[in-house]
Image 1 (spheres, rainbow, N blue to C red):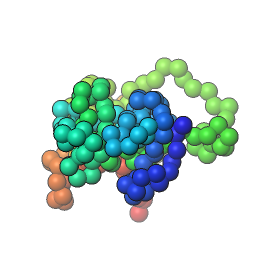
Image 2 (image 1 turned 90 degrees about the vertical axis):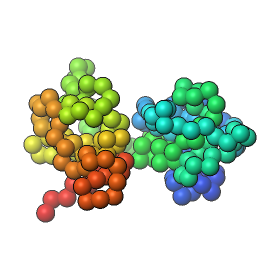
Image 3 (image 1 turned 30 degrees about the horizontal axis):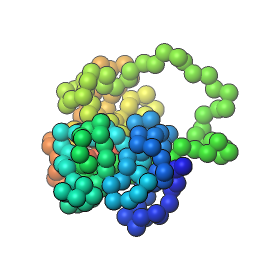
Amino acid sequence: MFLYSPLLSLFEETRAQICQGASQYNQCSSNTACACLSLMNTVNDGVCAYLHVKCSESISCANDNRTCYRPDHLCVNHSRCHSAPICYPIDMTLQMFCPPIPSMTMIPNDGICANATWNQNGVIVAGGNGDGSASNQLSWPYGLFVDDDASVYIADYYNDRVVKWASGASTGQVVTGGNGKGNQTHQLNGVASIIYNVI
């Protein structure tokens, strides 16, 4: 059973989705890259989390296997990443990354016609060359925007940049960031979404 609930005061602030009584790695989101991770400081509760964080950057929880001293992190079980409980970034549990699975009784409001048909053969329009920072690669892309010219703008999270992929291009063009993680005018820090404003 998946609940969006202020079960823990921590989640009131972050608006994470609690997986109550769900098994480890159960699907909990319409984003298939998200799944339930067991919380180490509760019984039978987990959190719906985006699974693709860099395991090499993870640190273990405290010796009690329940406490995480890293700010803005939770102690979770993520055995695909590490055998011991690890500190997991809270921002990877937000509903912007892991939106709840829509109820079957809800009327979809996604702008897609109910009788739409889908091409069974997808086309890669950006990336597709492994994880990395080269001009033909992305590293954990999150948000995107498609403009009137069919150019795709991608929030390239781990590369701290926004990349524009023109229609049919084999490489992307950095439009902002890409100068390391930071808060200077030429830098970004874990960019996850794009807001496009026409003036």
